[in-house]
Length: 373
Image 1 (cartoon, helix red, strand yellow):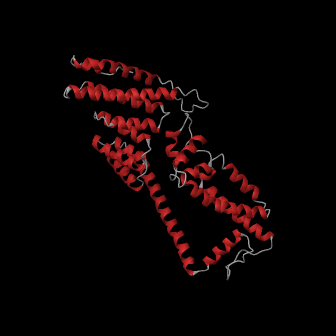
Image 2 (spheres, helix red, strand yellow):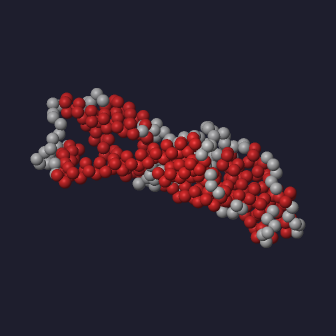
Image 3 (cartoon, one colour):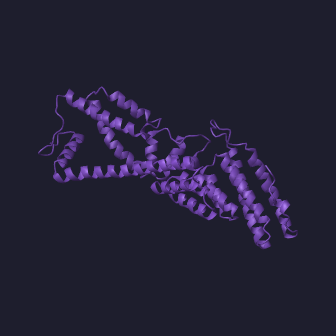
């Protein structure tokens, strides 16, 4: 897991890739079939989300605070160290409560250090500290001096209040979206139109939630469902559920663009048996429909069928390559040895062998239907 996380960090080492990076991409980068939507290391998680720049800002706050607590022999120092060290191997830093606890512990340690030295807390100075003061204390004095300026006394609290207000509005939108989604699922059996209306409202309040687009696509006709799924992908490009649903929808419409979405779904969720079964099943069904299409020209028909069967063969080869990497120390997903995938691979091979006969013999619908499984 840590090796996979380091590869993700290497993709954007300086500024990171944004919040919840690991949860969004781990299924597409994992090197074995483990389950873990948390990377179990708070610092690796910060590097993926914020990059080196964000981690350096964090260290600029933590290191001086630890130094102050160590120099004053603060009794809270073991508690702070234990929390920071445990974050190396767990996702403590994913919780806002832990950050509040760290801020409280550091502030308490600073107050204890001041009381032990018999000093009063730092007050607003009339001039900057002399050069003999330690560097970190001179920075504190400089900050206190800036706070004494009226401009900063208005700007900083105003900026903080605005940021808190924006965060509160976003959180309220997410909460209201969840409420409307649950209400839609509760009333769907009796009031399907009202449920769809609630889901639309929920997607407006929180547009980056893929479950809403999957639910709306399931309640819409083919054309509108494709629009919903594409809109979901515009917000979450690395969501395999959306790619798989769009691939199935396009395969039903005999659109060869389905192959790209099915391929993308297998790349984003490589150790899911269900994803491979669905991708190969849809490729087999699409190939059968292309082979049985009497309205298309024979050359175009064979070209489309060959393209579909080649994609299905590629899916099976990739699945075989992944299963050859086992056995793994951990196989939380029970990946590999899926009999349905093996049968579909054999079925695609037989269909590909029978395709040249189409040039001389008329297409028989019964011979082109996939074998039941």
